[in-house]
Amino acid sequence: MLKSYAGKIAWIDLSEKSIRVEALNEELARKYLGGKGLGAYLLYKHLAPNTPPLDPANLLIFVTGPLTGTSFPSVARSAVVTKSPLTGTIADSYSGSYFGPHLKYAGYDALVISGRSESPSYIWVDGDEITVRDGGPIWGLSSTETEKVLKEELRAAKGDRVSIAAIGEAGERGVRFANIISERRAYGRGGSGAVMGSKNLKAIAIRGDRKLEVADETRFKEVVKACRKKIAEHHMIGPGGTFTKVGTMNTVDVTHETGTLPTRNWQENTSEHISSIGSESFEKHIIRPRSCFGCPIGCSRETRIQIKGQEFTTEGPEYEAIYAFGASCDVSDPQVVIAADRLCDDYGLDTISCGGVVGFAMECFEKGLISTKDTDGLQLTFGNGDALLKLIHRIGKREGVGRILSEGVKRASEKIQGAESLAIHVKGLELPGYDPRGMKGQGLTYALSDRGGCHLRSNTLRTELLGIPVPLDRYAYEGKAEMVREFQLRVVVTNSVIACFFSTFAISVDDYAEALSAATGWSLAPEELRTIAERTWNLARLFNVREGFRKEADTLPQRLFTQASTRGPSKGEVVDRKSFERMLEEYYDLAGWDKNGVPTEEKLKELSIEGEMFT
Image (tube, rainbow, N blue to C red; front, side, top):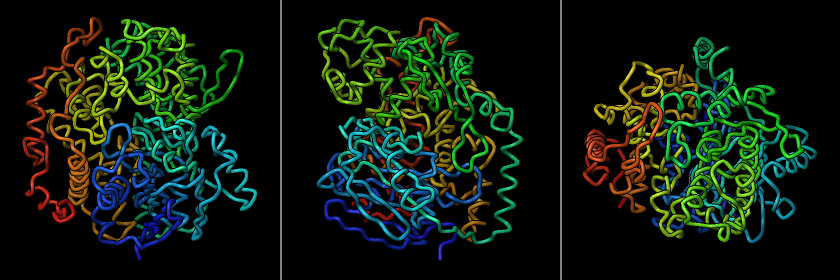
């Protein structure tokens, strides 16, 4: 019996109304661990090439990690893996709600969902019993209301805790950057909510009470105790540290001070409104910290605001929402930013992509590419918070100009004459709030991210901005390819375990190897985790190659190569195209990929990726 795993995968075909459960193969589990690795394997193995993302045949995979649901700190996360309707690439997204642990407690390491229900539905997982139920009464509700209604109904029947993952109107209506929401925590980026909506699936509800077994309980408890101590003593994530004081809100101060805070749709990278949107401006709205299941860090914040005569309490915003709705849209009112963040949760919208399309639309409006005739009368000028909030409603409902913007900046720019150079994305995914004109390694991270422009596939911020573990010239290109590759593999380990990114400030790959060995009974050395990570990264790359992506897609928006900021620490900086190309070529060589960015047969053989699977 597999230790620390639930040991089962449930396959749910909504078209055929069939459910089957199979055992998780131990060899497969050891080869890919869980999370990103197992999800990527299942997607590649069982999804036919070139399947349209919103076709019923696309797979929606909810998957846990080998430590999910255990007492190990900051591993409550679970993943959703699918083919993205925004980019056409693999999309893996992570949430820190109770959903992942409860999926394990119900007895499953993964749910693989295919097909489409004839009418709105939701899935109820109650231990061994899995049923597809009528979702008509909850169709049209916000993600928040859906969770509330289902919890009240199912708790009344069962009398104990139930976890919900749901979509809002954005997912129902096919917004290409719709999220899945669970306890105000999003499976974000890439549009998994739209995939769920295309299946007429409103929610998944889970209840479970099984106990997880670890192979060596005494050893495991020792590792857990040591890792909790490391977190508690860390100057950033321990008690009194930056993240425990204001969470990720502090990042806006760091990026502004280093000239890496994208502003006015990336025309600049410092904000004239930093005194209004810096962390101190949000602190006065904080009520209390919030934590994910089993996490001692508590980086999230519950906030309360009054806007337009209404008072409400919410959770957030994180840094990315402050960047996306504050700096990028040039909005200076923190209450508008918080309200925008809350609207995105209710509709089930990705905050980074939503802020990206609004900032793009504002620049199009100010440059005369669109007018009030196109925007349903909205004055989409930078800084107009009222227009920002109204536009989020229209995007979430796919109404008026929101119908075009709901397609993402890449597709929207192709429909607005003269707008393509204003669209800030990589592979169709809008960029997060870190400007590579002020940190060159971050540019390579964006270009190589398997799900499109993402900072969480090789986060160079710790090194380039914070100087951890040692200071590094953030404007230099030399050595960045090797740095990015090393960070990528560490992140893959984190996303396969599945652990919180912030916990890795204190917890190392060696710690994860020790914890996994104690939990599973396997003898896992750090070097084997690295090999698993490299295998997973190459498998995700193979998925994208199969879907048509090559070197030409590994690039950056035109603006970052040609238009420099006019103020701040990174004034005058662009990403030098020739230097960028050298970094890319150096990376391909280090990774064992050919000149077109395709993993070589030698590399696949080295990583024991079966050739017959990919013919």
